Structure formats: C-alpha cells, structure tokens
Image (cartoon, rainbow, N blue to C red; front, top):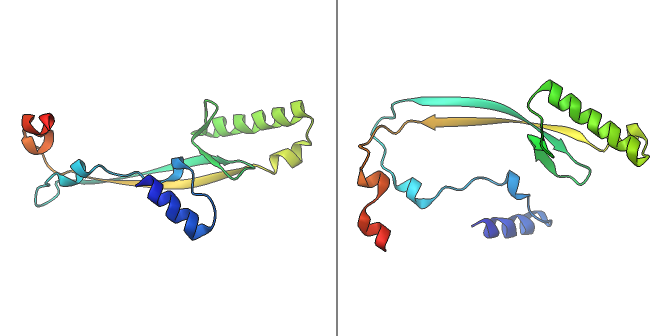
Amino acid sequence: MYQVLQELLRLWTGKYPVPPHVMPVSHTPDDEDVMFEEEPQEVVKDTVVEYGLLTPAGNVLWNRFHGRTFETLYARAMMVKVLKKTAEECGFAEDDFLSRYRWQVRRVVTETVSGGQFPIEDPEIVGTAEEESE
C-alpha cells in the first residue's frame, strides 16, 4: 500500500514522495473487523502541538533531532544554540546559516471512541485457535 501511495504522489507532484515520517498511518484489516457496540460509550479528543525543524534540504524533523527533543521552549532554544555553535565551528556566517532553518508547527488532533468492553477471551477480539493454525 505504501509503495502505491509513493507512486501516486510521485506522479501527482512530479517529485519524489513525502518522507515516511509524514505519511498517514495505516490500519490493519483485523482492526477494521472489530464490531463496536451500537452507541459509542465515550468520545475523547486530544490535541497536541508538535514542533519540527525544517532543514535546508526541505525535510521536517518532527519532535527531535539527534536525541534532542523540541517539546519545551528550553529544548527549542537549546537547538538554536546548537545550530549557532555548528555555524561557528564550520566557519559559516551565523545569520546566513540560521536563515536556512525554520520551525514547522502542527496541531495533531486525536479522537478516541470507546467501542465498549468485551470478555477477555472474546473470539472477536483475540481470534480463535483455528485462525492461528491457518
């Protein structure tokens, strides 16, 4: 499926596809087969703001780079200091070097719908011994 999406994106945009870390997550067919109760018991929405470092190559490194996270103001300020130090050590003009990087921000909204509770050995959830031997 991923290869088909890559080819479609390449044909559509005339470029190579989006890197895997920004591709949509696919669900397994087994997850889609689970029956939910008639009425969802609870819907929970969660919103998270994520920060990414847009590199000169055009890649966005979401949430971390070389073990450094971007989750807090302090962490992002430290990343700027690292870039400044890199520019200095490589002999680049600091302003020119930093102008090649940008922060990319996205809001990720997750909606969780409770499908109810099932007995621990429910074959709809865990399958059956016959399925495992196939």
